[in-house]
Image (cartoon, rainbow, N blue to C red):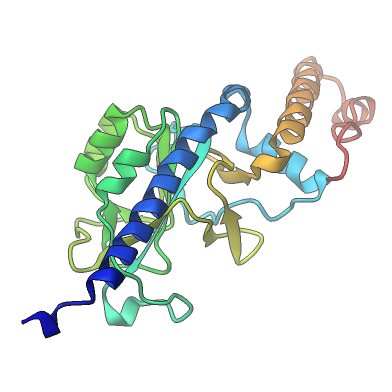
Length: 266
């Protein structure tokens, strides 16, 4: 019988490594509290203004694919990314570039949610089932989750909309994830399909903003500059709107209010 069991030392090492990885993921989520002030300011901005600033400062590829849409056009989110990754359990869906990995419990997502955090789930090409449903979203909501972004699918749409949990996804389906998709990682860099590039890299703690126009990712390392410039841009555009509403010619208004002169390169 013992010959059929894995070596105890190897098994203990694996379990310890797994626990340390999950612990690091949750600690990373708690560390996002340092970006609270930036998040509160980000909530007052739009994805379009953030996109314009990122374009000018040298980060033009931060928009997620336009296939990733809100369940309701009124949904908005802004917060720090809690990164999760998984892969298909169906052979024909498995991404060639992704090495097979052991499943971890999706309860780990709940344990790593920090108030206001945005759960970001990279499905690595899975397109059959939902990866999140109404019950998961209810649990997320009760932990003060700020929203969900995934390049996969969700289900129980009416329940999620009623919860008012901002949710951005690629598709809806009644199929659940059992035997179809598995969670394999927490707290590591993930990549989701981009609009101006093949992929957008998202690190734990990066800032996420989403609205009816789409989802933008702001690397935490440049977030303070980007948000400050975006606030200035929003103020300039408010002036432009007032002048256009007063009937002034658009060319003259734009000439008198340069929108991007204050933005530097990063």
